[in-house]
Image (cartoon, rainbow, N blue to C red; front, side, top):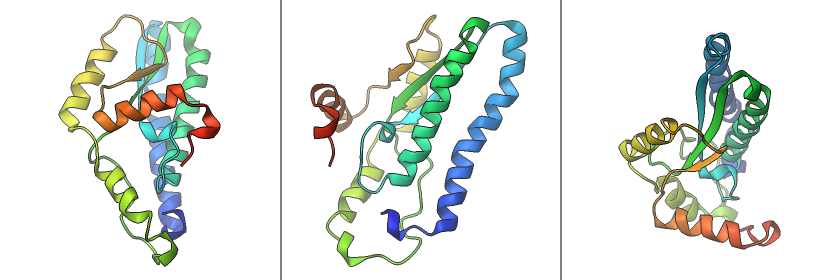
Amino acid sequence: IFEEIDEHVIERYVFDYIFSIIRLVRAVLPPMRRRRCGKIAFCLHWAWWLALPGFSIHSAAISALYGFGRSLRIETASLGIQIFSVTFSSKGGTRLPDKQATQFQEYDGIRPIVVALSQSGQSPNDVVARVVDIIQRPNNSFHNYVAPHWITAFLLFLRRMLPESLFEW
């Protein structure tokens, strides 16, 4: 829950999550540009496009990477470099600690939902196998979805069917 997260934890999380990827892209892009080929896959959690309670900071960081990837795709299109995203729900991975500051009683009703969402997902091995499969394709659209568990598939379906304004919690 946003108000329960310490400010320094937020800063460190956002810095680590976003700038580590930016630094990695800076390192791999020059050789790809010289060879005029290469692929960069942005592995994104499905929280970037779905408003979820308790994921405000994570969603902000993922959304920043999504925007970075889309812009980079346009910048590198003429260089033969393919940039795309792979969206999935994963178990484990980077997430904020469960409690960093005072817990507010007003959020007691939503806290179990947040915990359940953060603990759901696929096994890391399933995700890696699907990501490798997507990377090996000759051409990719920007959006690629790893077949997630049933609730994520259902949310994807709802996301496509309902207008943005209706799909808020």
